[in-house]
Length: 166
Image 1 (cartoon, rainbow, N blue to C red):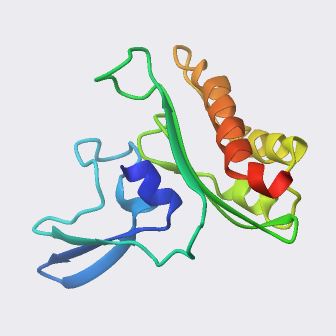
Image 2: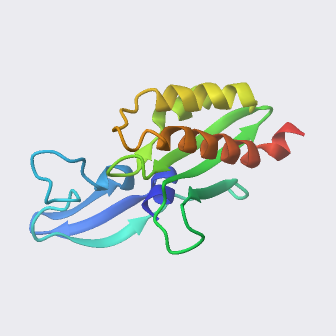
């Protein structure tokens, strides 16, 4: 769910001894570092009090896809959530997040920026996704995830924009 919420710009509301605060879902989970025992940005004593989804325009196309190694009850090998709007032949809104490539949802900001103002073509999608994934540093045993994630992204972006391209 975190991958889809990240693509939709959702925020997590928390409350603790210091009062209330709000964090983007994309930043809620921590990257491994000095405190690997902490998975989230919650401070001691804080509780999640809500999740906020910004209002989306009616009819905004969105999708979530995951690749897994079994038909059911399997964690994603790679996943992608996206929301894309095409107006007057160009992408004017894009929210994209990958899952299962990092310790937390990977918000694809470079890809989103590359798509804004571009026609929804295969070449534009390939450029945006390749630009985003060029920053990835896979480990020896999970490098297969990058072409898998690329394929998911290209498929989802194509399906979300098929009506605008016909």
